[in-house]
Image 1: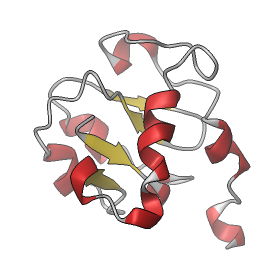
Image 2: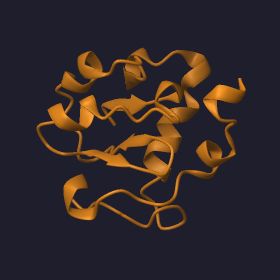
Image 3: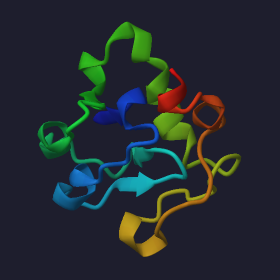
Image 4: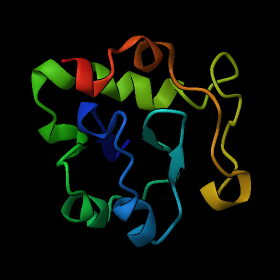
Length: 111
């Protein structure tokens, strides 16, 4: 896994990262975006494009956000979205679900 989307994207989903990703590995959930861990090529373009600074290289992830590594990976599992590794976010479109931990987060406006 090269890059991880964290809390700053929840209920924002700006999409600038999606537009600049050269391999289309950023998928849309109901409340946030997710980077597919096996499709990301570690180019880092998404990091500079993200206006909320929600994307981190996995090795630079602050300890308090470390659980987002598992959240991004598990989103694609059969128990969550069931997407597996489709190879292109555009081919599958937005998903109506989120990782359970994201679904339980309070809306940003409530914080």
